[in-house]
Length: 351
Image (cartoon, rainbow, N blue to C red; front, side, top):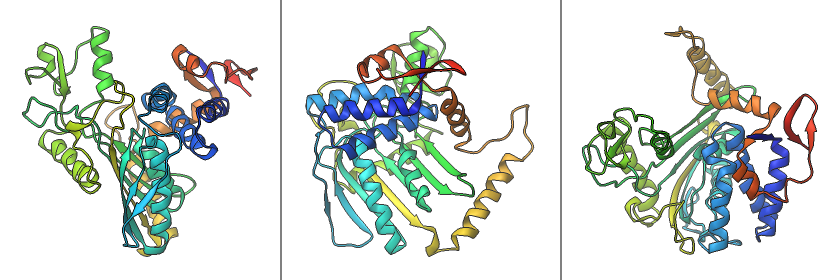
């Protein structure tokens, strides 16, 4: 795969989304979130998603120019109607709203209705951390995970994320699904004829996929605990916003692209200053991170904290560029035309 400078990719995505009818601000939100994921090595939620988001826009699943509405009289809690916007656009707008409310109230929460797939949950939680707050983000998704001991998938992978600010742009950044693994990873293993480890997925009869058979669904993280987390997220997202259950949602990658998916999210922002001096909080968080990073490892690899692997990849990709598959480049064809080759890294397209 050829590597492209992040700014080149970002500019190309903005131009493409503007040509598809998005506003400059919303096009920037999409590009910001997808390039961020690709920079941090989460390619499944990065530039690769652009093609599917374009299908949502072109098919009518997502509106090009949504009109957001906020319902409720409580100063620190409300329902945010995303009007079938692209999920990334809805998520960014909702998080900005909840950050502003938490600045005044100390803590604030929004349930987001009528949204679509919003990519990485931690992107929005880190928006709060960048504002000096703690961010908590949840989303439901189409059912791909069976209950513990069950056969029929009833939970989505239902991600949850938390971000908190530390010193010198360091911080705690957690993003995790409530399934044992990603669906795409199981599909990739099966496609290449590789074994699927026990405990990751089931076959269509509800048995562990390592025993053989056709892929049925994913297994919940930690058994009944992961099932409970997935259900908790359905309650926070689907029930508080009065949106469909996970089992009633369509799949991101499949038709119909002309029907809104009605994904729901739940976002919380906590103003650190309402509880403790922000400088003290940042210093103590950095101390906590250091305790883990400097603890004795069991092997050759050092102990890391959530967010460290992504930080390491981002540092490399900002220097060497984002790797794009041919199909990703094809989606951006005509928008990546202005480029030059970096002298110190010949396979990186730079502005």
